[in-house]
Length: 478
Image (cartoon, rainbow, N blue to C red; front, side, top):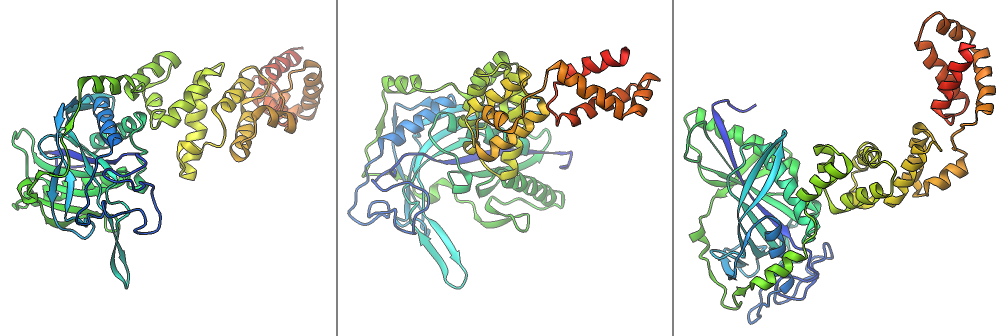
């Protein structure tokens, strides 16, 4: 719990790697991994005399992201050199966009604790990624330039978030949008999505913003939330003790659970921005923007409303299915082929999400097709198998990817509904449990459920529960 007299102010800068096959200014592959320094060339390593040429797909993807977040699209934008020296930046400057970004004035709508809020976007601009430094014990620091020149968009929010919960909701919603419009795979474990957190605190009721600290390169939502919690408490403590917050760049030390100062924060003039003389301005026609807009798929907000109306889902369930296009599409196909879409949703929420979390896998590795889940639900709905047997079938599907109808046939799981067969079993169960029968007839209702349980045990869970219940009532009343 934070100090009740203070308010947190958060703005985010999200760096998203675009899923183009080649880099932003050369033909090198953007594929993740590879031996160090094998995915680079004279252009992306900034050798003298080389000339960059922008990848047209990068511009299209940036516009797609902008349209999906309600941005204005600039008819004229340019690329600038952001000058700084660091070992992972071989040119000693990064090509980015300064005062004329390709997208501006957008928004992302979020929901936190049942309340809706709009987070404004200042801009989305194009830039190139830097390389990666590897700190090897006993060998010093090594530079891998494979990532140099991988295309990025940087999405900059206004300081509209007032809690780490709102910041997390914003990041999750933004990730979902970027994946649905298919501009990035957003794999945080591979660095495809990273964010810098700008955080300050101020007394409640104060209009002026406090002095902010920037926490760099968060590649996990949970780490980002922890870093925000710590940094807010740190700043409040400094102010309460009569100190002053300095504008600086900090990093999150996960092992110690603290933010650590890296350097004083640079201002824009420190980077000596100027237009890149080797690259032409980016001119985008209204016709091209309209063409890209027409190609956009149904976005998460629209899908959420449709899921709630069409399938009767709760707001929470609908949101959970929109964590990725794969999961949303899996649900839709399974629901469309099922007699009961709500039951399909329950199986995904209850069983699939549980197993994905246990195995720390993504929706992409569900080991069977959505039509198989539809078949399983349909088997249960028409009484061919019971719900408890359904769970056994599901486990087998998950482990082997086998069709549920085949599993039911091979394992002999088909539900027993034949009254003649069940009557014989019921009479045997009643004969073997005279005490329970006596308890039921003396008014103990729970005894009846015990008899139902004995029936299910005798049939290895394959008896039709409704037929069993009706049959026991009939026999016991005679």
